[in-house]
Length: 249
Length: 264
Image (tube, rainbow over all chains, first blue to last red; front, side, top):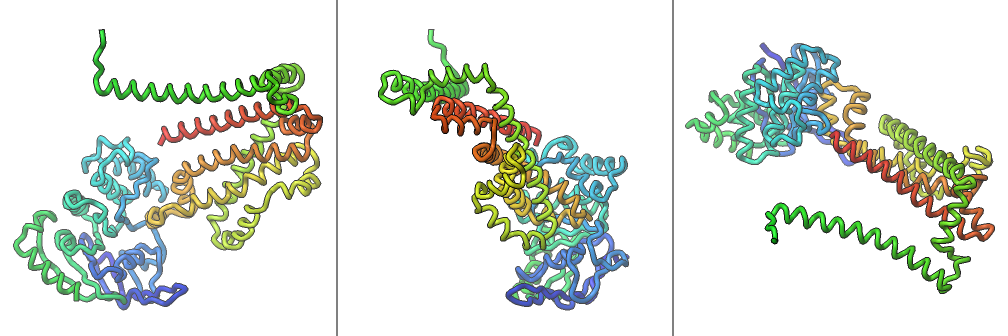
């Protein structure tokens, strides 16, 4: 089932200095449960696509449909994960994960139970009452993902969520996040500049052109297993070469 | 027998010794200052009629306690705390309004900047005429002095808040109220406390300035009255009491800060 449809979307920025065409005729359809990575040259407007999907900005032309409905304002169906975890330091881990239900006035006993269950399930049970600064970087990013899942968004938007972590932690957290998203059967869009990260995580990889960005090519590597397992797959480096050439041209 | 200390014990004892040394030096400096002052006055190197001296100040204090010291003290303290609270609360509310409306912020920006650089004492006569020559005028002076700085620092704290955190909350469907109460206010708590600290100092400036302008009671009144009738003992004694009160109020805020830091 198609959950997200980006239909001929263009975006033109206005600033005092100039008019910038950021996106041009972007078309993309994403199926439920899919993990899609968006890569492209830096500054090409990858993040802008996520901002449009979240409804925080309106496209200049074209439409975006989430579950059949047009998105034109933030409705709370979107889960955002950013480079930094942005956990609130004055809230405990449990209370941080309950932020979404709280904001949407859905903090029912069931919601608390659900969030608490997710924390237990993904190995942070003993840190429920702890504050973010007592957790390691990887654990914090996991907590941030649980916070995003706790209000049951229809789609997850991951904006370079691993790039603030050191290499060792990044591989581990990549595996973690991929496992959690797959086991919760969530749809996810990952924006990254790291080609190997995209290949190791995504079912489909969307390559964007230079600004104004439009979809250049879509790859489907058909690798399976965890990100770490995929990195060891024989065809991994072949995919890397192909996509690398495509991105750098 | 000499007991051997572990590395840890030695570190801790060294640290304690250093701390004791600092406190001893601090107290020593105070004693030296007053001692020297008294000595120079007793040996008539300085004229204690003009400079006063600790023993004369002590006598004045005893006399004041018998008369109406606590009335003066109470009035000044009350004016100060009123001004402090009104300025802090009102300033924070105005800062929130300015954050809320970008248009309002842009419109009022130059006025706030001008008001900030204006010496508030210039408004003294206007305040007296409008508020009457009483406590109202003194509190108004205090509020005026504190409020602009409060507005500017609280607003700056709000504006510094991480844009990504706001984005995250908006994507979750948060409205402006929720962003204010669940993110901005808790996030700027340390900033609010530093504003309190600044306001403690400023509110004393406001109160004493106000009492210099109009008043028939209070510590500022005692100081100005003492100056006019050339009773330097009274001036110095009141100043010392003022020092003590300001320190006490600052310590109270520091205590609140410690408590807040602990609960985070």
